[in-house]
Structures are given as C-alpha cells and as structure tokens.
Length: 338
Image (cartoon, rainbow, N blue to C red; front, side):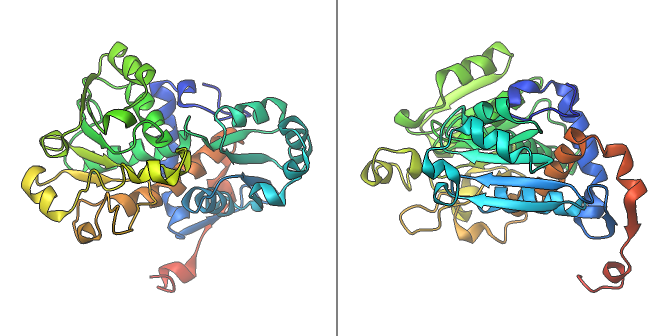
C-alpha cells in the first residue's frame, strides 16, 4: 500500500506488511504521546475533524494525535452545525472543506458515506466510522493492543485465540477487526452473540476462506474459556429500530470478576472498544473488573493515539521528518506531568 496521500477508508486496503508498517511507526510515536519529546513536524497543517455521530474517544484521539505532531484541529460536530443540515451534498462539503484542510477525519451514520465523501476530497480522508460498516483505525489500535499484550506473554498474533462477545451484527469495530485478523495464521475466533445479532455472514465467510477457525455460539461461559483475548462490545442501540428492541438484548452477556475467575485462563486479556454501558440493566463489562491487571481497555485508548499519529505521519508522508522537528521536553522529565 502506498500510504502517502492515500485515504484510509477500509481494512480491506491493508496487507499484513502494511499493518506491520503502521505498528512500527506507532512504536516510534511513543515518546511524543508520552510528552517526553515534542515534534512540530506538522506545524501549520490543519486537520478537519468532522463527526456527524456522537463520539468522545475517537474524535479526541484523532485530534490529540494531530496536535502531538504539531498540527491544528478544526472540528465540526453534529449535522445541525454543518451546511449538510441545509441540504448540501457530501460532494460539495468535501470539495469545500478539503480546501481548508491538509487531512480530514470523518464519522457518519450511513455506511459508505465516508468513501463517498473521500471521492470528492482533495486531501487524505480517514474513516472515523461509517454506520455499522467499518472503523479501520479502531481495528488497527485493537490489533496493536493485542500485539503488545501478547508480547508480554512471549506470544504473537499468529495462533491467537479470541472470543468476541455482544452485538456482532451492528458493531463496526468487530467487523473491521475480523477482516484484519484474516491476514494472520492459525487464528481461532469464537463469535458469541444472540442469534439475531450474529456477525454478518460475509465476514464469517471471509475469515473461513482465509483459513481462520471460526465458531459461533450463544454460550458465554464455555466460549471465553481457553482464549487469549475476550473482546466485549455493547449493544449498539442507535442502530436498532426502537429502544424497546435494543432493550431485549441489553445485559444478555455480562462479564464480571466472578465469571472471569470461574471461566477464563489467568492471563486472559479483556478488551472493549468503549464506551462500555455502565447502566444497571447492561454492564456488559462490569466495574468490578477495574482492578484486574488484565483489563486492557485503557491501554487500548492510549494505543489509539499512537496508531492515529502513525496514520497521519504515513498519509502526510512525514515519518522520516518527525525526529528532525523534535526536541526533548525538560519539564516532563523534571516531573511536572508525572
């Protein structure tokens, strides 16, 4: 894949060597994300952060990543604050805003909308999530987290055993992650969901065609035994026809410390793309896991900044210039932010 000047719209764009390239650059970004060094490699560059669907982590993470590379961020949140509310097309919006920006991140509730926008853009567009379709940067940060967590156990992504639990029909994070895992060898995937919220058949078929061992189940306890990763997802209530329909499935699969102790291996890593639903009738990932050292959800969010910094550095072709435009930060090493 040629990163420079490219849009990042789908995991389908990536080969295994492309993923490894992103991870290698993400490793290089760690001292900047940790404020041990400062770089101004994107000084004067502008990111258009366009989020037409609610977001906290993804929006702020992309913005922080661009800031940490020295760039500035301009945000549009919600349809009501954009000209789209006045009937402007995605084509016109893309033509205009790409004249104001050096890169654009977009989230939109309709599948395929970000690709439609990118087709008219004059600058690289990164998909921040398009409906229930894909979330490529989340899949990359998830796999980067898996890589780092397994490395601590002397393991690699090949021969990974993972259980994905929850709303697999509408959860775009698991859709993209499954496609990414298809690039690896001898991976075992257990898909745990209600029958009505199963992983789309075409994604299951893609994994099996790639040689992955895939099992589908509605039994949580037996499915999370003997896996390296339990990846939990919330019910995507915003994708359902009604709140009542979503409530039928909320709280169906709950992972808490007692379930973990009884059924998981001692080093099983717990992941979640967040937000986790902390309401009493949900709690797919209970708060009593917060002190479990294998809970990796906040390490995931930290890793998201690294991966998104890497994507910006690659698409804007500044990887080799980052160190040249950097310096140590004395106030950090002196303890100001420790």
